[in-house]
Length: 394
Image (cartoon, rainbow, N blue to C red):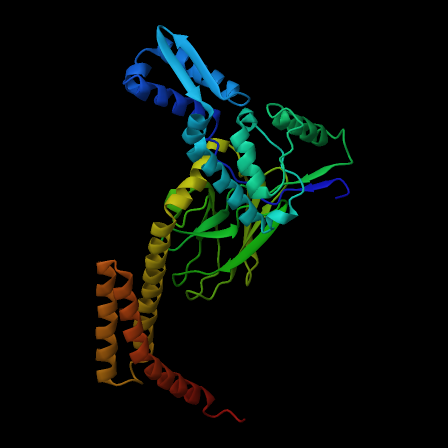
């Protein structure tokens, strides 16, 4: 609109393409001639001849029903139906990417005006047919699919060079950006497919009494644990005024510009102590690596959800253990000996539950301690308030 092109989402599998089709055809021919693909690959020259024949078969069958060629006395034959059976699983992976891209963009298929074909494999009729069914419109094949990306890159280069002022491309970030929190969890601040430039922030606090420094580690990726994501950088917010755990308010701001430069600022809001670091979020990472990270996040989604849930319960338990111990020390003259004993026992049970590394055990121990100590904590609070108000005229 008005020369502004806005990227709504990006998704794809850079490991998927024409080479997969070629290899599937070669494996089919190996089966026909009762030899393994490993035997063929042991002869690099012969393997290359078969692969080139597979590439030619793929092209011929885009406009013909049958293909055959003799190589070293062996007949390599293929028909259109067999080709489509061989490549169907790979085309379905492409359709999965289409579905995900549409889901990420948050728009219905009916709003798509044009589907442009990119890459030589889109010349295959079956690819066009599947796309036409999915998008309910005939794909635009008026441009050379081998040149489309180069044309787009040339236009963007012209824009970046300052030669074109009438076009603006608003891109999206390909992977989520966030920081490490307690337990090695990834807390996403800028999500994948967020439009750039983009700014987002979140508030955090300290987990230890009197904490003066806070290390902030920045990660990129889609996994729930930072150990499975890509570390971009690390810096330390220093000279935080000593306060009880949970009192400092530390705001972390992410600012991602159109060039992929990520500026991260951390600021303690009570004292205005702050520090800033700049990171190039896409430096040193290839399209293939990005695709692998996305695929891994999908494959491990269920396992990651379980790990995150366990770690969040463990973090809650550790915070409750520290708070309980502090409560017992501060209120030992208010609550009874039996209450102190019972709370201590329940607190020890919570510590023991952490050793099991089972979320249900930890959650049950948390509930038992909270259920018993909540009314006692309320009683202690009432006494402390009454003591504080003694002698005060209302």
